Amino acid sequence: MARIAVGGFQHETNTFAPLKATYRDFEMADGWPGLTEGAAILSTFDGINLPIAGFLNRARAAQHEIVPLLWCSASPSAHVEREVYERIAGRLLHLIKAAGSLDGIYLDLHGAMVTEHLEDGEGELLERIRAVTGPDLPIVVSLDLHANITKRMVQHASSLVVCRTYPHVDLAESGEWSEAVLARLLKHGPLKKAMRRADFLVPLTWQCTLIEPAQGIYRAVAASNTASASFAFGFPPADIAECGPVALAYAESQGAADAAADRLIGMVKDAERDFAGKVWDPDEAVLYARQRAVALNRPIILADTQDNPGAGGNSDSVGLLEALVRNRAEDAVFANLFDPKTAEIAHRAGVGAEISLGIGAWSGIPGHVPFKASFTVERLGDGNFDATGPFYRGNRMQLGPMALLRIGGTRIVVASRKQQAADQAMLRHLGLEPAAQKLLALKSSVHFRADFQPIADEILIVAAPGANPVDHRAFAYQHLRKGVRLMPLSPEVSG
View 1: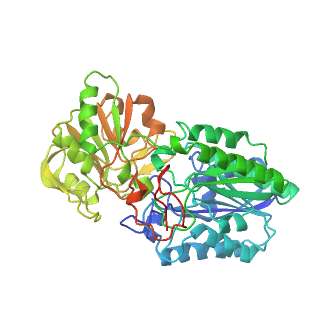
View 2: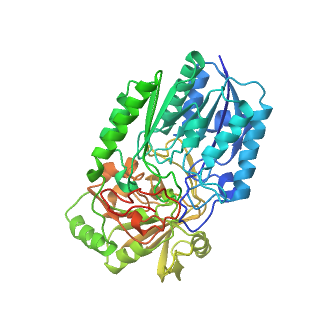
View 3: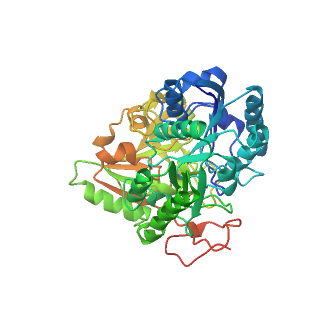
């Protein structure tokens, strides 16, 4: 048995996004539970696909004494406000100090948090914790596949453990692996570390582990014979010095750790030309999908990747919606439009009402304006329902008032909280059967694939307006370290 403190503080920061993360964003529940502190941590995450859930399951099985701290998460956005970071980080530190004697700490972090005053939110947090615990206490941290891993994070954590799937269907498993690493540290002492970087950024759409070359890279990670091996693609829309892909290895000897990290980063570099694919213009995509769908029994999916709320987009752009309407799409669904005011108006008007207004485009993307038209309110929902897909599995969705609007052959799923369309239950909550549609326009880059790819005939990556450009050369990087190529095979470098 060991006495282990457990907590988490998650945010994925798109420094080019329009809206910052407030305390309310961490406090409220949406696709994941809201801010949870103390004993409630021991039950809140049961059965949910989150790293902390997997860690707790294994820690209980090992009969460790668990000291619950706090856990919170906010939907990806621009920077975490300074006061918010200091408030939550300060509370975590207070709880660790109050915990007394500990044998270890486990933290469920994301790895790509940027605040108004810090490039490296996780590295700063770990350094502050080390100042409290001293250098020898085992601290194991689970990270997202999109973590921008920094030298400070590696320095101050005993081990960093990265999930291996995108869509992230193995988040809980990464918590289990973290517990196994912590158990090894407790029994045998510290491990040697190795960290290697790639010199190019990989777009989110081509980081998907359901396809090559990412699939093969993560097979190699899983097959590593070291104590722990990880690879993180990084989160490209974060304008920080240490953005980008990183391979990690932990082993009994420095030579073994170095060899494993070198092998993994070599695979990444060798696969550079394969990290690319076709990106469609909205009108081109709709016209192609409309023509193809006539003879199909399964839907074609149009991934609205540049307004992916999972990458800091606000899920309110209407460029792809306008293309659907303009090109007379039939049996089409556009989901999810984050627009609380439109949802409120629809609920006031009631089912069957005709409402005329401008929807979406309220977060201030330059040159983007609301889509003004008349819509029929077809269905209403309270936004409370159980997720059924593998990514959000086990979680109770709390998306606030929702509405299904129709214009021509296109239906629009409107939500009052920002959440990417990565679970079929989001559509079913409003009476739509996803497999029965011809076209599904989903605000997501990759996570939708976990639940929607099995029902799809074809998937098109579409570049409509949004805060997550699929081509990183559209970003005005100011802080990215010199010499990093902004796209695979691109001659353009930072600095």
